[in-house]
Image 1 (cartoon, rainbow, N blue to C red):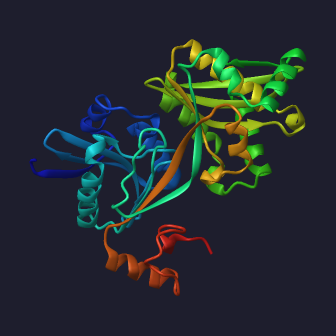
Image 2: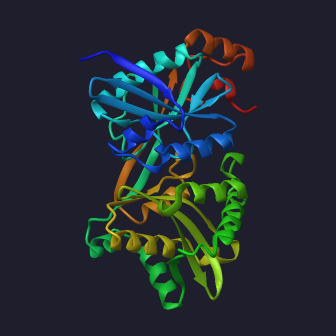
Length: 336
């Protein structure tokens, strides 16, 4: 079987990019994207690399305060050899403990991690995400679109509403305004309220992989969204809708256009994601109207040093139960 080797890689490590070049992955796993998220969090970008013979596992992490680690924003679960995930994570926990880290919170990828390990830490299912199989005929994709979505898309087209991909990025400032207004409208946490610097760095980081779709209604930008393509998998990343056009539901036309755009370019799957925070809420219901395909979304909560973890809980959250890994994790970082 061979010995197990584990290491924490910095973003400039050639081993990080070399592994991504050999395995199925998403943009959430890219070192430059993880670095961007680390700057947002005030954390340090790292990737856990575990090897055993020819088996390999890579897991992007943000290390906080030399105390614990969490996933970057999105779905950056472990990639590599699927049969090695459980053993690789156990070896990774040993490394984290030796590095002085006591816990790790990991968001698994709904598509790339279809069989998450149930015997490493605590696995929590939050709901489902939605994807569109772009290999299906256009007629079948339209058939899978819910009737109310089809009606509103047809009405929008009859009324002259337009959706297109703005490759010149002329409307990127409008997208940012709409995104932040939408986060305010849904009362999203500060975690989701990215600033202008983040958006500029996001575009610079992802380069030709990221695309901007906009919806025009009577000369006004009614909705806009970001789509990121990696190896044929397109992620619906962020979006916003102008309050003045909510009744017209322009996001439906946007996803209809994005589906056609992605299929025409030969991509394999469009992943719409799920509800806010993984919940099966109204956002999830909106996305579910475009496809029958569902994927379970899990997070994995791992404690590397149980004694130190319990000490942190007792010190920061007196009365909380250190053994309860099903709620906010790590529990000592729970908001008041």
